Image 1 (cartoon, rainbow, N blue to C red):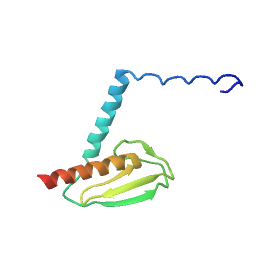
Image 2: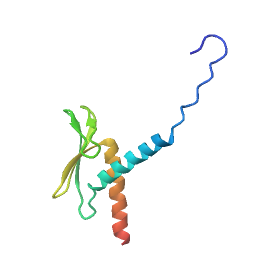
Image 3: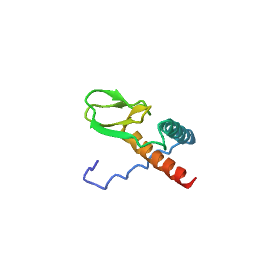
Image 4: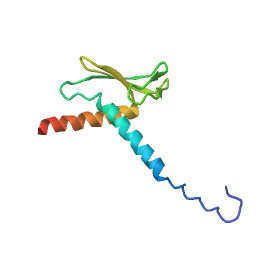
Length: 105
């Protein structure tokens, strides 16, 4: 806040402890493992992006997808699931990575 005098110095961000960093890494790895369950390199999925009309949850992270947010319904011949935008980005990256691996194998 400016009081007419010298500007107030900004406070540095609070340091992140190793435990918090480890928890973030663990959560990220857990989510990536859940996303990998939805990866199928042998089939091209059907992807439908729509705006959520009712409260639903993401099948990967289990977080709610609020009404008005983009949700992705992804379907394979034996599997259909719903992802929020963040999980969809991770899933897309994993699908590309899986596709690249299968082409080089």
